Image 1 (cartoon, rainbow, N blue to C red):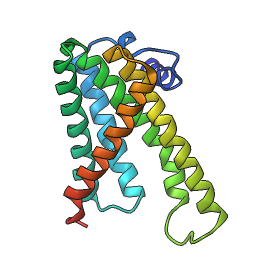
Image 2 (cartoon, rainbow, N blue to C red):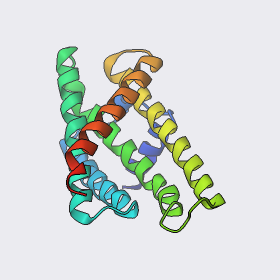
Image 3 (cartoon, one colour):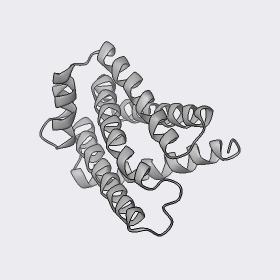
Image 4 (cartoon, rainbow, N blue to C red):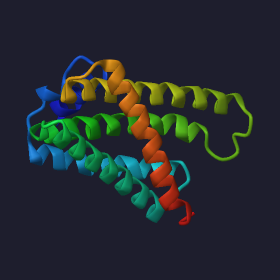
Length: 172
C-alpha cells in the first residue's frame, strides 16, 4: 500500500508517468474508493452536508470518468482508460487531502484575517499544481504537449464546476 502512495506522490511530482501504473481494475476500484472518501471529507470540511458532499463527489468523479472515456475512444486509445483514470483519480485524491489544510484554515470566523489570506494562497497553489499534474497525465494518455494538457485540464475544471455546481445548487 505504501508503494502505491509513493507512486502517486512521484506522479504528482511529475517523476512518473501514468503508463507506469498497472492496468488493474482492482487498483482502479481501490483508488475510486479513496477518491470518494477524500472528496467527501474535503466537501464536509468546506461546510457541505453529508448528502451534498456525496452527490458532489460522485457527480464530479462520474463526469471526469465519462469525459475521459469518451475522449480516449474518440482518439482511438480506449485501452489507456484504466491507467489514465487511476492516475487522475489517485493524484486528485492526493491533492484533495493536501487541500484539507487550506480549507480548514479558511473555516467560519476567519473573516479578513491573515489566516484566510494564507489559506487562499495555499489553495491557489494547489489548484495550479492540480492542473499541472492533470496536464502531465493527459499529455501521456493522449500523446499531446503539456500545454495542451493544461488547457484541457482547466477547461474540464470549469466544466465540472459549472455542471456540479448547477446540479447541486438547488440542494443547498
